[in-house]
Every structure is written in structure tokens, then in C-alpha cells.
Length: 204
Image (cartoon, rainbow, N blue to C red; front, side, top):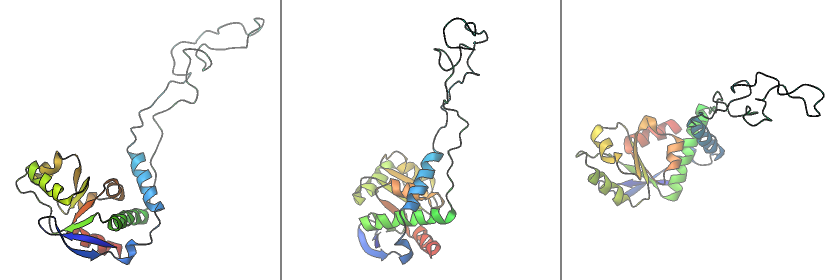
């Protein structure tokens, strides 16, 4: 598999072979990381009132015996209208899923390899919009000819960030923010050469 090297005009200049360590990775590693990332985004705000939380229900509805009806001790039992919720949602649940460091690295390498297979992994010397204007960032994105793109810079400057901020189909992150979930979430990936070299060295 190879990554496509682009020139300043975002045109194909050459290809760069991926290390062997990027191939043969079990896709389950990516599944686990994406599952963990999505679980971490859960708001965990759903909550219901149990029978001990609902107001009222202090008096026994009817006598224990002699009425012919089933015994009842409180109007706030889950079987009554206005009663508490049995086994309802609580906001104290922990949705965090642990993913090992090794699995995180494997997941990212698998996502990068998938982009390389699809011809959507691009390497450039630099990603910069010195003017800070959205139209200049849009021109870069348009030259790529992709549906949506994740740009990865070594260090993100303010003008480049502002230029890409209002483009819905693009997202710019620094190298330390790149992860398998982001890489898999976008249909194409543009990485600065310095960042790519660091990723390759870490994969060995």
C-alpha cells in the first residue's frame, strides 16, 4: 500500500510506500477504539425516579385483608399510575471502555492503511493558509476532489484554524490530536510530512 504525495497545488507528485507493520492488522482493534470513543461521548443525563424518589405514597391504599384485592403498601409502587419507575435509567452509570495503548496504535495504523488502500491518504510538505481566509482553504479542499477531509498539522496556527473553521466538510487537528476514530470518520486524510515521518517511526 502507498500514500499519495502531493505538491503545493495539491496535485499528485509521487507515492510513498507504507511500512509492513501497517498491514495485517486485525480490524477488531479499530472497532474497539471507535466503540470506546463513542461511549466516551455519551451525555449520561438520562434519569428516572424510583419509588423512593416519587412524592407521596405514605398511606397504605387499602387494608391488607378483606377487600378481595391484591395487597398494596404504597400508591407509589411501580404498578400504579404516578408510581416510581422500576429499573429506570440512572445518571451514575460509567460507560468508559478501556483500550490499551498498543490497541490504540494498531487501530490508528489500520485506519491509515485503509485510507491507503482506498487512495485517500495524502502527504504534503505543509498545510498552511497564511491569509486566514476561508476561500483559500476552500480552494485547497476543492483541489483534492474529496467529499470530506481531515487535515493533520504538526502545529496548528491560528490563521489556518480560522480558515478551515467554517468549512463543514473539513477538520484540522494537530498531530497529538490524531486518533483512529477521527481517521476512520473522514473519507480522506491529508497529513504533513513531518507528522507522517513521526507516525512511521512510532510504528516500527
